[in-house]
Image (cartoon, rainbow over all chains, first blue to last red; front, side, top):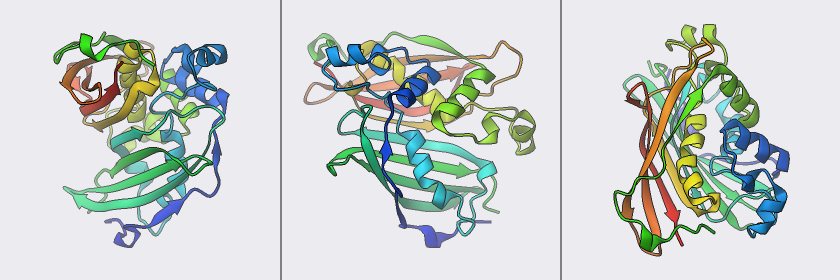
Length: 149
Length: 141
């Protein structure tokens, strides 16, 4: 079944802010085999001019997806999550993400379409810090394979 | 701040490449670190039941590792100003203890204004491109 077009342009502010913890940055960096000490060693990060550990470039994806769960798992949307694969992803960074950051997300469903039997949903998220300054913009396209029939 | 100078690189410059082995345990660790517990990355029976050849790696794991082509070279994740990929083909990860190797490469495709460069990344698994249109804009010194 095709996705519910009523969800197009709906926006989803994250219910709370996300505090970026050192341990999560270290764990994420380790999982992608990123041994750069700037993500692991506080003294090294400080020597290089950062107030705290620096997150690897794709770190924010975990928060984007968690911030969108309320929409993606909404039965009204009709997304069969068991068929979902990631189609495209982009990140634009205005500044690095550091441990200690308190970030909020506002996500908007930018596109919903069906093509050759697959459902596509595109989500754009703006990430801001506690001063309301823009930190990053993420775009994700998810594909539900073979569900648009 | 990276020490790599804009004036010292040319279009066509190849960044240091590397190979990364993907095993099931790496997918489990990435699921835990990222919070993406989609069963197509963790449960072989389930992956096959939804028409996949076997468990596939998280696309974001491949993207995360691809980013290291740039961050290893520049030694500073903050040099990356934008990063985009299309996941063109899955990385299928067998449960044989051997895993599967993915080759990561990158080259400078364009020198832009303000000491920025456009870097084209590639990830290949068994000769097949697993990332398409994979681009990084990076700030050089």
